[in-house]
Image 1: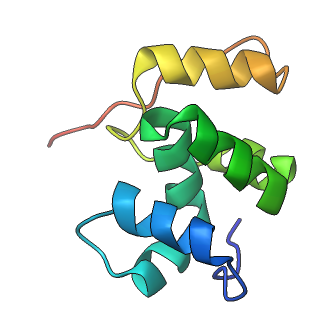
Image 2: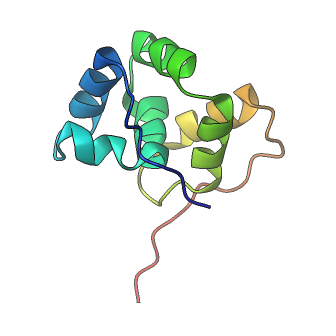
Length: 99
């Protein structure tokens, strides 16, 4: 499942994207909404979360959880957000596999 870039993001959401995906431009961060949602759920302040949930859909956040790349979310955030969205039982946290 893929999603479209957030082309009409508000200035505050753009600022959050720039802050939480600091190694990318705001446009690059907004081009990957699932990764941005994972970063917000893991590293965002409560104000960041409230703003993002008001602007983005809970469906997007749930899809981001289902497609979270390994190493992005910590165990506490992973469990918390699965419980918030009632995605239970909580699946194992994605792990990186090395050949």
